[in-house]
Length: 276
Image 1 (cartoon, rainbow, N blue to C red):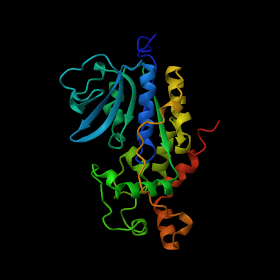
Image 2 (cartoon, rainbow, N blue to C red):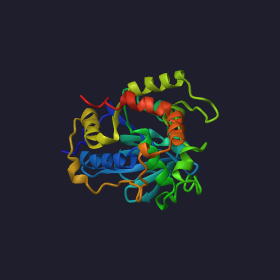
Image 3 (cartoon, rainbow, N blue to C red):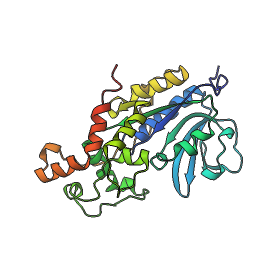
């Protein structure tokens, strides 16, 4: 029996918060394969855009062709402008909050969900220095050619990036709370972010497969085998630079530690949250 026929709106709905370079592409594609099993193959993506930017990606049960407000991109993917989105058109399996949607998902999405749907929020964290290495490598590589930030660091070396004003810091706090770059992040912002994270299922990049399985068990009482999904889409950067933190000069170490203080506090607080 297809679990599509068992679907009802009185349930937990997985909502994934995708932090860039924290295994988000892999988590989304693994979830899509889980949705494939859950729906007996009857599923599709809907990308919700504002302008040319994707704010949300919805994984839905396939109920046949959607109306003409939904632009068909390929066999299992549609796109719709946010102002045309009507969630009652769709049977949702999962929502991915893209980075652009971190500050507005409540009013954009949650306000339109049925009152008896409980968002099951989950997020993946990564050790901050490892994430910065990955981010720099990706932005400077050909793999990011379609990203608006492609090549944003110009000819700066990784060491020069660490010591520049472009070094990313407090990303999660700033994006969840809509704090502009010119405003300093303070303890109160950290506390507000922790209150949000305390209500999410938080795991690290080291425990992705088991964590995605847990989400689908908790929400759908459905367990799937991730081993068979070895070919899911991964956004791993080729030729990632390898600069161990201990090899940095003292100035670069200090610059990184100062600029990412809040990121490291969040990671240290939640890195063992998924260990039972």
